[in-house]
Image (tube, rainbow, N blue to C red):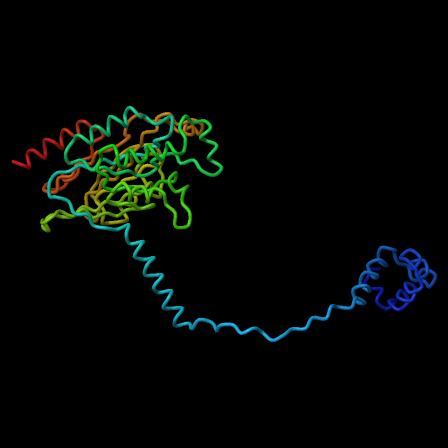
Length: 354
């Protein structure tokens, strides 16, 4: 028997309760009438009766206060259209045209610097900075992770570092502004993104402050045009911290995959996985594409060793020498030997100046 089965006996139970009977005495009284029920079921019925007997508080509802009518849907749509236009215009800033003089130049594609990491190869970084600064025609770019930027639960990582968070930002400003380099483009990395919030991107603010020509948190699609030379084909360059796709056999797999499917880019550059390589080929669509992944400056990588990733020694930065007057496939040349690449650029510029 359950509590529902006792409905027909409610009147008896109610009368017994009125006489002061508790659940045990009520169960005994019902048993004398041939009704066998456990005391705990009697208690359940008593609770139900108490709820039914409870007098509810009388609540009187007054008239509704005067409220503004809903915004007319036409006005709402117009307002949303304005928001959408601003959003789309902001998104389109990742694709832009940069005009350069029609002469040989080089773009140094710097791998992840991790400026405040104890494993950063500062000797190599300072040597490269001096080389790029002192070689005419070298523009600089970076594929993200400018510094470690440990925040939130990862801030504890600074306990194992000899650098502080503020020193990381100081080092980043030095690289972007005070090192004497001409920064053409920067994209954010996963470490940089950790500092993002609604409307907050510290690396964007720093890039703007330091006069970086082009910045985006995720991807830049730059068209390099040649001043007063519409007869020269522009160069399309895509920068990301990483491209989707991995292969055991080549570190540029994701970058080259994008080159195949994009169909417009000549140069695609990435970093992130601390490995390096390049893949140059002529695609079915006829373009010669250069897929480049740079290793970066982090040489002592405890995370990589812990996870069993093999560590590489070369490929921290790639120098892409561009001769807009040359024919394919010689228009772009990638140099991993940075001093040799800069020397080649110097000779090339001298020959074009004659």
